[in-house]
Length: 215
Length: 391
Image (cartoon, rainbow over all chains, first blue to last red; front, side, top):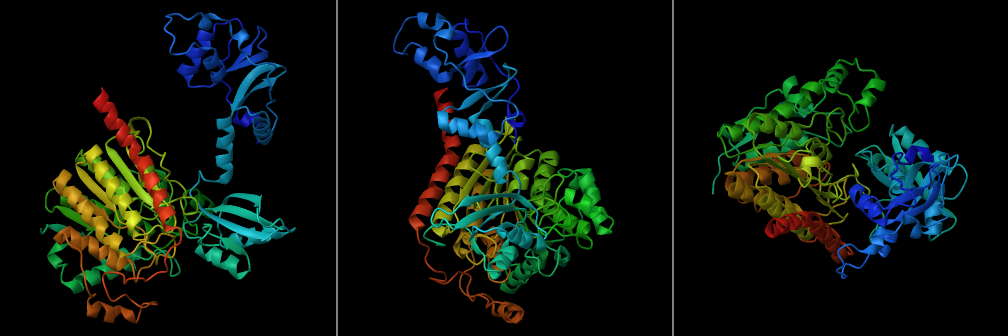
């Protein structure tokens, strides 16, 4: 999936000479956590997070009515240079960037101009869709040999029961590197016949997989 | 305490029949009816016939195009591509002869139950043919074609203008009813079900709380696979009592799926008959305490149709009419009549005998986890009440 399919296009941005107070107000008003800072050409030159603003704000224990800190310009607290992504990047690359740099948001730029923003929440939403949980379905997990041709054999069995598959994902078996675990969400309330068929063909169905009970 | 109640029944309910190997089998309604007849606690004057729901009734919830599609499927005139768009002709809801009529009769049964109670003829009414909670506005799913529970609630809203509490103790999430009233503050839904991590339909998380004006009127308490009586009942009793106190309904509609029992082949909960004695007991009590008795109970899932469903459902009627469950031995004539036909040995008692299933490891962790979900779900009410106190 591409960044342009997932990103938010209406981005709230501010110029570097705007006051911190304005950023604080916008963060609250729009329930957002990041504001890209752009120059006159709409190029991203920095980013301000809710944490940057909070760190720059006076302590709530100080009683000054109009604290001078909030009048300072955003460029004094913004982070730069900014990591940006392209609309044609993959969502999983964005997830990699978030993980590696321990950040939760990147502006999307095209020809150096700000055109969107993608956050942790957008990435998680994509993950939820990948798991198929948004469609009515039952989940089954199967432990299989990590071997060419296994997946089509398994899906064939499901196909024989005329069951639509909402999602498939595969993860390595933590205990045995020669095995993989395939997770299906299938659109049925009665997965018993297909589970029986899989068992009969010698597949190890882990369902429901609760350590100490089924293992 | 003896209550005047109506039992909605027709042998025509058996026509809601997908095919011989399908797990959803309405023979369980007949088995329950016969069982009750044999106890002497169900008499002919208590029975009312279901009526056929009209298109107007159905369209309280369902899309006209969907109703049309079900009717076409009847005549074999629905293309399989078109059918799949409406969830018709799938493994779960295959097409069968006269499916429109069979499904409409079930809906009509729940509407008869509503009218009997709300026109004051009886205090409570039971339609075991109903409870088809997975039916969507324009889609059949999870063995359900028309969603009689949702239609009955909308019918109450439209013709009686009462606030409705829907409580669903089927082992599967009551998604169809929940989504139908997700933004409606006059209908509060509570569903207690096995977690959707593995089980169909997958939804029913604690954080599904409703939308817009309906926010705070949808409650979900997912419970872990292998949950047993004690923990199930802690969740049910605390949640229902608190939600009734908070919402103050005018009428209670309860969905009584009987698939949370150890024997049920489709789910992984470990309830015994004890929960099926306690579930109607509290619903009955609260209906009298808050709703002048107005309580409509409908059926639901339940796939061990010999050992579990007839006993569980007969208890709803017994509690509804006398406030106490059956105890002791099942009527001998019922056992004699059906033992031959039943593929499994029928139970001899109303209760399950001590130690009838293997002890569950990690019971305390499961109980703790369920308790946590209960607290999370009810936290909303606590916050709400604190806000009122503080303002």
